[in-house]
Each structure stands twice: as C-alpha cells, then as structure tokens.
Length: 512
Image (cartoon, rainbow, N blue to C red; front, side, top):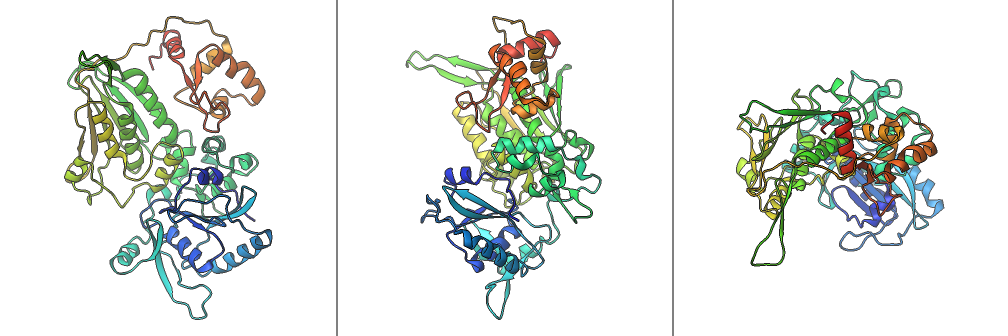
C-alpha cells in the first residue's frame, strides 16, 4: 500500500529543486539505476539524511524538473511496485525505501523515500536483472550515484554501526512519549500532504511515516530526533537540552545579569530564543552622511548573523552532553557557546576564514527537520553567511573559537561601534482587551502556527477559537500574521505585535 510521504512533492518540484545529493529524477522505470541510487541514499555517506527518487519525472541537462512531467500510466504503477519489492530484497543487509504515489499536473509519479539506514553500509547488484550478479557499494557524489571504490569504500565500511545519535532509538522512552499534535503541526507547517491524514493515523503509524519511530512491530521505539522535536519536555531524556540567554548590563565582568531559559521542542525553543533576542536586545541606528542623500541603517547585531549562529549551535551541538547552549549578551558583543567543538578535520584557521567545510554532520536528522522549518540550509553555509552579514552591516569581523581538544565552540559577534544601546518598546496606546484576547497574548510565545496556539489554549472547536480568540486578537492589534499577504498559507504563523508585547510586560510583569 503506498504511503503518504512527509514532503510536499508539488512544492518541491515547483521550487525547481535540481538533482543533487538528496534527490534524483527518473523519467521511467529503470530498476538497475534506481536500485543503485536507493542503495546510495541508504548509505548516506555524507550524513545528509538519505534522499528521494522521483519516478516519472524527467529533467533537463541542468537537472531542473520539466513540466508537465512524463508521468506513469495507471497500469504501470502496480507492476513497478511489485518489481521494486522483489528487487529490494537483493539489497544487503535488507533495506526497503518508503513508497508513495503522487499526482502532479494530472500525471502519476512514484516517489521513493530512502532515509539513511540503521545498518549501513549497504550493497546491491550492479544489475538486479542479470543472471550472474556482482554486489557493490554505492554513494552519492553531488547529483550522481557512483560506486564506492578504494579509500572511499574503506571509509564507508568504517561507518558500520556508527548511527548518528539523533537517528538512534531511545530505549528509555515509549512511542506514547511522542506528541501527535506537535507532529501534526509540523506537517501542516511544512505543507506535507501527510498532514491531511495525520489526525486519523495511530501514533505509531504516523511516527513510522515520519521516520521518527522504528524497530520491530511488536516492540516499536521512538528515535532521539522524534523526542527532540515532538516531545514537550525533551530535557527529560536529554538533560541540558535548552537555550540560556544571559544579559550582562554592566558587561561580562559585572555583578548583575538577567537570564532567560528556553526549554521544549527544538524547533520551538530555537524560534522563541531568536524572537526574545530580537525583541529585547537588537537596536537599529540611522546614520546620516552629509556627502550623500541616503542615510545608513545599521544594527548593533544583525539578526541574520544571530540566527545563523544560534541555529548552527542547535544543529551541531551534542545532545549526549549535559551542557545547554548559552547566548551571552552585553553592550560590546553577543556570544553563542555550545559543546562540543567542530570536527577535528576542520582546521581552526579555515574555520576563522569561513572556508571550513565538514563532510560529517553530527546530527543529520536534526538538520533535516531544521531545513524543513526554513531555519537552516544544512550545507555548511552558516559561517560564510555570518561573515557576509556582519560585513554588510559594517560590524567588526566575527570570531570563531575552539580549543585543540574541540571541547566547545564559541561564535563572537562584536557590536557595531556606533550602536551599543538596548531597545525600549513604548507603544503610544495600551488597549483594553477581552479575557479571550488576554489568554492569547499570555500564551503566545515566539511565532506559532494556528494549531499550536489553539492547542496551548486547550480549545478543540476550530470555529470558536477563530471567532472568539484569533480574530479579536488580530483586530485589537495584539498579534499579527507573519505572512499577512498570504493569510491561508500553510506556513502562516502568529506572533505578538509591539503593542501586544508592551501590554504583556505591563500587565503580567513579564519583560520578555
């Protein structure tokens, strides 16, 4: 039975996603080439999370999908699935990708999702239809599937049983520790077609579809990545899973500091911490130049650089270490500290120069989910982007630090020399709010999709929530849409306005 895959294929194709390390297009059913590519994705040599094979979709010489797709005839679908099942039994050790039948522009496509396997390395016959078969290992090199030979084969073999921590089973947890509402909210946000069926699926089935549950049917287990993103208190399983934001009004050597701790699912706390920093510690200054008409606008710390630095820490920290991520802010610099440091294969000089490229990603699945949430590109672009954004803002060059033992990683963002203040939000009007609007303002943290806000308020009736809570809060100017021009977008989120934050601060004592 075809499965609903946790992607929106139509959006993927419409974005003109080119063939690369994680996707391959096949105009027709070619079992030899397709099985080799499935094997390569299962080996996941670069720890990117595997990939997708789209059968029935052709592409041009640059790897761009062509519309309308070639498609597959209805009488081909069953035959291809039966042959695929038979051929996949030749993969050693056993491995079966997830299969979905999708429709794009009235053409049927088969999509194979092949996540990185738990028992790599995998090998497959060079020709699955040949009478005399020879098995080989395959990996992805950019947009091609190639045989692993020589040193590459030896490196692949060395990865045996080295499953990244985030993709391992958590034996101290149960499938019931995963939150179905959080999983459904994620699927709605990323525009997955699986979202339409998620509410009707048993929790274990939904978890297996999203590849956050595995193991034998009689003893299913959640994976670490599932608990990190879809459990309300992942710190119960991974102590230290939190982000601490510290403000030192007198400098790092002063006696006073203010601390705000963010705990919860990784996607949520990353956004909430970023939003908290943006609201409280970012200041824009307008500098006028007598020689030119245009004024220069600069920030004490450019938000895009902070976002890259913090997301980098969430992505690459070790969740086996009981140390939180720290963001330390004073008037002179913003520092992001995480544990441990970068891989030893990366020279510190290359790191500082923004030339560091890692072939090993500590948390491939975490990166996969962060990418779906548009929080990271996941292609070692974070440090170059920090350098670029800081330079564009006219800020001093950032500093990247680690020690020889790589026990920690520090990113220092110096403040712009002409902007060293902290903001003070003082809206002119403090409106009267209804009890329902008050509940929305008090509950809302960071940027939430509608389903998450409704769940936080404990409301089950969608229409009652919309009419009594959501619309009055928008009309009162206490909350706003992140995509006001696309009110029905699946990526729509809601956040407090400056007026809402001001009301919250003066009516609840919450300075956040």
